[in-house]
Image (cartoon, rainbow, N blue to C red; front, side, top):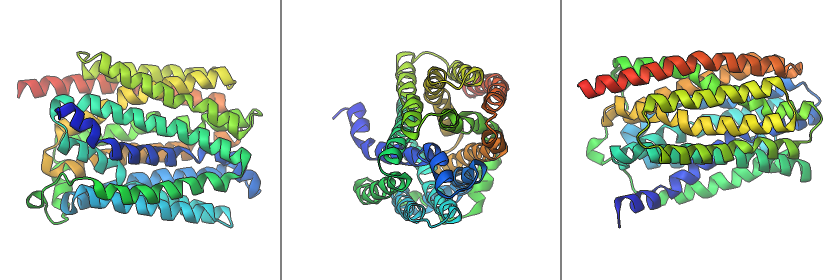
Amino acid sequence: MSQRALEKHGMAIPYAGWFLVNANVIMITPLLVPVAGHFHTGLATVTLALTAYLLLFGVMQPVYGLISDAAGRVRVMRLGLAGVALGNLVAALAPSVTVLIIGRGLAGAFAAALAPVTVAYIGDRVPPERRQPVMAGLMSVAAIGTGAGTISAGVLADLLNWRAAILAITVAAAVLSYLYGRLPETLPAQARRPVAFDRLGQVLRSGWLRFLTAFAFFEGASMVGFYNFFSSALQVHGRNAAIAGIVTGSYGLGAVIGGLAVRWLPRTTAASMFGGGCGLLFLGYLAAAVSQTIPAILAAGLLAGMALSVAQSTIQTWMIEASPPEVRGTAAAVVASAVFTGAALSTAAVGGLAAGGQFRLLFGIAALWTLPIAIIGAFARARFSRATVTV
């Protein structure tokens, strides 16, 4: 079997887990308005279920990165999926919005195991010359999961109720936790070390990894924070959850197109990929700021999905190139933690604007936020590439 075929076959289960985790992140967004109505509370309060998920999803990732470097990748990912099932079960059966927020926070805390460890698993298993396409594929799967999550959650909320959408994730996570037991471990026992914070220190002693961590915090707000309000913008303007979910599902289609673009342009520099991807995201937010109609949000979702595959995959490969194998799980966790912590705080910061229906201002802020991210990120990535070649 060729190396490429082996990679494709071997990545099927991790891709499925990545799909589920990303569907799990986003599926709450078309449910925010129905849940607010069910519990007779404000949209800003229900948005805390999204914020709690993203915050714990970010904060817990370094913990799992450290554990995966000590206990192995597969074991940690299975634990994470089991916890996702448990947290969502609590949320689905929640008698109050407070319990819903707790359940979603718990699901986020366990889902955190999948994000850095999946990236480290790919870094362990896939040779350097194939990582960018595989990572782009991972980003495409992420956005397809995001699209499927919004569509299925919106449709289930309209046909049944909001609890049904969360229960579907519960069952899928439990099944995948079992299937992950079939994966080969990529970190040999002799390469594992006891959990120790010196590995975290080793990561943070690297100048490039320190930069990536700080930069990822701001980039995360732009890339995976503000777009969560596309669905709410449609619903506040009179569209039901099913329509909102289907329209914002264009994010997944955009990610597929973006993933194909990465494969079609193998000679394009990573810096150009990042800058171009952020440019697409800027245009998406600009479209949403101008109008919150179906065509505008459809275009915004499409452009944001393309941006994820093109730009975010560059961040992932950058992290892999900047970190030695023995601390790659920890490095992936630290950078991913920064991404989602930035995303969580951005949703909390603009939640009041969403509650007040000020989506023009919200997406205008998102567009302006994205511009310096594109410029600084592209410049830094080009400088890193030159430094690596020099070394």
